[in-house]
Image (cartoon, rainbow, N blue to C red; front, side, top):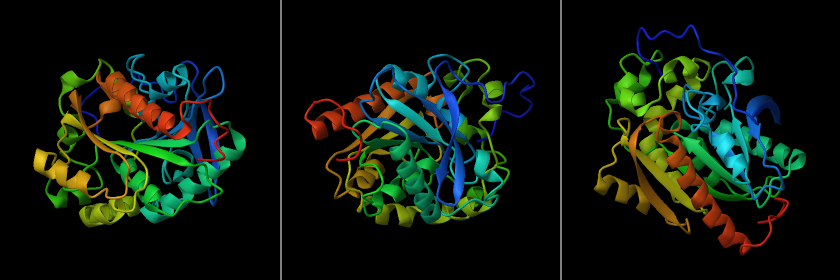
Length: 312
């Protein structure tokens, strides 16, 4: 994720978090991941694990340019534990795997991380994955794998900024410095609060090479993964989503790939660019995602009290 050329970032505060949000570390098999967590006042209804996209860290879900941006703070107020993870190759694990990992490797690490979280925190009814862009690729990879009895039950997916078919020249995907990609990431300046690009400096990170190398294969991989997903899925496209094709026919074809998912929804977020969770539309998008999760939770639990996360 790039910021506007020439934008002054001297006043950025690296590591700043919203009230109630704190950093944690999460053992994940061979790696230790850095993360942010926000917990509700009482037992959680469920746990939302937020997975950021390429070139961004966990702070993407705790935007500091305006109090309404933070998914972590909002989710905790509504009764959810929310944990935003730095994916392998970002944050603390950047020194452990500087070249990053493939999606298959990341999925294994995510499973280890969720298994650890199950033993360390009260998770409620289970885990929802809320993912953005490349993080959505990981979420679909994880959901397509066979369930692991040691990991907490996966209850549903909410993914923004991810389609199947690219709307850009594939050559752009090979650029490690992401030159001329500002418009694809942000859409338009009016979609974001003042100081967004100064505050986002601590969120931005280089995209690891092994992660970037898999980008071209996504259209074929997406179809193979989608047909194996067995949990409810919600996909959101921003009004100015420029990375992915999202015309009506393409979106309908994408939704049709999820043949085993009990629910598939596609939504559009007005007043937003690709980085929805850092813009003015963040609160609206996060509320819709949490409402979708609440529907899934109620359906699975019959509206009763939250469980300890150890059974579906």
